[in-house]
Amino acid sequence: MSEPISPSSPTSGPSSADPFAFEGIDDLVGAWRDGLEPDPLLTVSEWADRHRMLAARASAEPGRYRTARTPYMRAIMDALSPAHVCRRVVFMKAAQIGATEAGNNWIGFAIHQAPGPMLAVQPTVELAKRNSRQRIDPLIEESPALRERVKPARSRGSGNTMLSKEFAGGLLIMTGANSAVGLRSTPARYIFLDEVDAYPASADDEGDPVTLAEARSLTFAHRRKVFLVSTPTIRGLSRIEREYEASDRRRYFVPCPHCGHRQWLEFERLRWEKGQPETAAYHCAACEEPIAEHHKTAMLEPGEWRGTATARRSRSRVPRRRSGQEGVPTPSALQSRESLESILVFSPDDGFEEFGAPGG
Image (cartoon, rainbow, N blue to C red; front, side, top):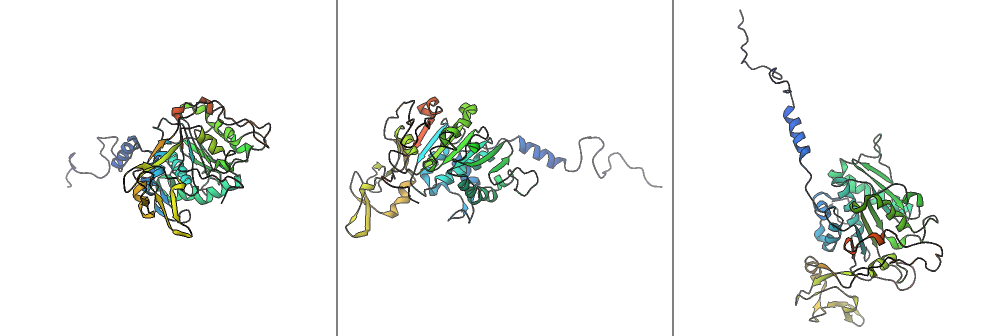
């Protein structure tokens, strides 16, 4: 005769004494606890260093993104972080110094850390499509934190198209400054305006594209962020120049490797022997010692942005008309609502072309 099973004998499966005991309960509780833990409070530059991966098809240096490679971009990216009081960041820049990648870092940060509707504007719709293929798609595909939040375009119901990327809590819309429909398509908490000097004077005869785009963020009040970026074109006609001239004109000051004097680098102090460009060297404004190319990396890391003027408190930073644009209103009513403390404008150098079309 078999012995009766004792109540204390081990049995397979969940215990009848605990109605919540079942196989996998520990994993479920662990996942629930992980979900309750808030994301770390990162700045945009910290997020990029931790999560951003550069694809070989989109970067000359594939692999993990490192802000240390472009330290002058750190303060600009961090001003785009939600914890920063600034709501509008303007960057007048030289060509190919990492500004667009900084904006893409901001896009990635928003998708992962602070989701909300975002509008990214290129000069034309065609450029927006190209930017989506060559920069935004690799940004998402190469960064695991983003790949799990944005479904592939081939997935049913993913909401992911060439010019639209849906993710939990937000939507990224990409368009061109030549499309009034795209500029007024949806409210946006975040607005990235890239190469604004290449924008047309008017979007489909409906007005200044910068004004149309920025109006999308009005409903988000103090929670909005706007990032304007451009290489300046013709002095006196440049959108980004007008923004810079009305600001405190921040420059990136770096220390001299010989005497430690901090200065922003001016082209006039780059000198060389006549007919011998290989002898070129930058001469310190304080000690006049020549500074060679190999000093650059060590100089950039401890650099800092400093204002070089007093910002003008003006309600009309942008003239209403200029030649060839009669009847096109260009001042942004939005700008007049901003306090000077909420606007940061950066510029590493003038970089203007006095005459002719902008360079490549």
